[in-house]
Amino acid sequence: MDHNQVLKVLKRNRIRWLLLALLPVVCFLMSLAIGRYYVAPATVVRILGSHLLPLDITWREFDYSVVCQVRLPRVLLAMLVGAALSIAGASFQGIFGNPLASPDALGVSSGTGFGAALALLLFDRNMIAVQLWALFFGMVAIGLTFLISRLRKGQQVLMLILSGVVVSSFFQAMISLIKYIADPESKLPTITYWLMGSMATASYRDLAVVAGIIAVGAAILLLLRWRINLLSLSEEEAKSMGVNITLLRWTVIGAATLVTAATVSTCGFIGWVGLIIPHAARMLVGSDYRAILPASLLLGATYMLIIDLIARTATASEIPLSILTAVAGAPFFAYLLRKTGGGWG
Image (cartoon, rainbow, N blue to C red):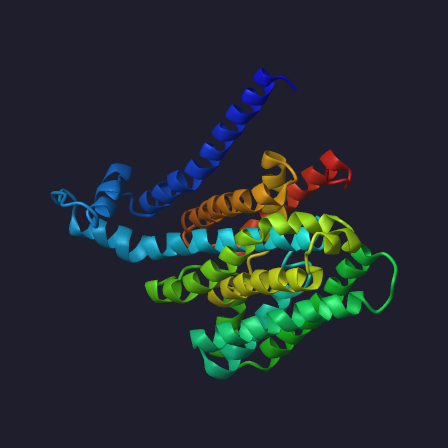
């Protein structure tokens, strides 16, 4: 590759990253503007800017309430959840060297869902209890998946996926048991609707609780993203470079499970995000995890903003998020299968 070609590649990458960074900003403003009550984007910008600059108030009080009290916490939560699930999925795919690995496929989502549903059954909507129980059972689920995959030597990737299916099925059965014994008048509707994924009840309090947890987990994953590339080497090669593979693997697993548990415990199951967004990021920035993780984070935030916007505006009543992500994710995954033939290069 000559000098001019190198410059073209660098320029193309800069434009690509600039577009990736602008996408969530544009969708953020549009999500605040669009809804059953429309607020002009320019008014949204002025309302948000009034918190930083001494602007003249040219908007109605109702516009301010819609933007800042109703939509802003929900939109911020959607961005956080999309970014968290995507970066967790990319990390799982990296550390297990498996493009099918995701919080859903490895049983983490089912485990956290069971923990959160159990907490909802026992403690009502106590967010701290829900998140702690979700985190604990998420760690239990990923630990069980890893242990079962080690019961027999052989095709570790296949064993890992099958182990994830076993663990996920077990916790799904436990969730069904909880729904069976829950009070059908009060607890069951809450648990059922919550498990389908929704941000309808998003508040600044929820945002404050979940933002700190996701920020810690995501920061750890971003700091370790260049080491995830080393997991493609053999264990001996990695050790010769001074990398403690076991410590690295469990640190990444812990951080990815932490952010997954935080999202599930706040807004329920939202499947497919952690599986397809890393693939979309890989198609845009290549196979280097130093680029895949930040690209997944930006794409995931954008994707969830769009999904949540459709959920609250497409029909008179809200559509559960997991339905929309499955409807969008399954065709995209079929397209990936057709394009790659399962090679995932």
